[in-house]
Length: 209
Image (cartoon, rainbow, N blue to C red; front, side, top):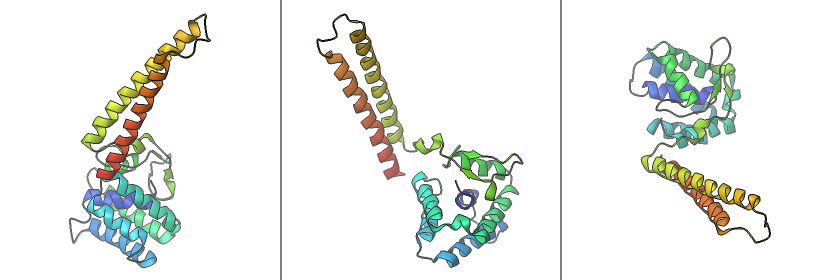
């Protein structure tokens, strides 16, 4: 997650929009105002920020925010980066603020994001932030999504097990020319169906998030 998206999401989770007169809300407003002036109130980035404000913990909305930051190249604007760093610094002054930022960036806890490589000095913000793709990209938030993901995974594993068993049977048989046993094709079909269920789980989760 880039530092600008990290600052926005962390600020929202910390309550930047719930208090009207506070150093945290001032730092958040300064960053948002700078982005609005730079890119416009109707820009994709400004709209993405508004969407995240309505649901800060939504993975799909955070993903759109990251994409809009990259598309607008906002993470290459030194003034905006400085404002993002200032917001992150303000969050760190709050109890548990550093832990909150780490949760947002790593995707642990109740918020979503990506894994991060931390600078040896301990900084995780600004230009020390390095974007990587981590396992949190596959996090499922909704109950129906989790159920379908578990069911699909179990079906896929069962299919792979059946496929592997029949494959070993064919390889151990003296006659390799009798055609594949029905169990081999059945196992493949079950595994494929399990994969479709897991894909459906992710699609439903993204729709409902």
